[in-house]
Length: 80
Image (cartoon, rainbow, N blue to C red):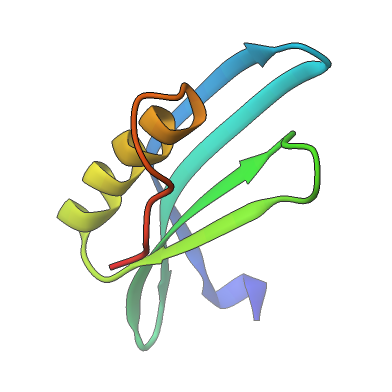
């Protein structure tokens, strides 16, 4: 399965927080069916957080919304 997938990086950010770093990665995953977009956040206390996006534009703005949420400047985003 992984051999048939291609990753398309959209945005990567790292935040330094008390207790460690938080990594935010947004990318497209291409397969024979099409491209899906995802944002992963690792380094938060409970567990990794994950969002699905429908289109490239949603993924790019969703990445910014996740950053705003993590820095306390906005609400937790909802996947499009």
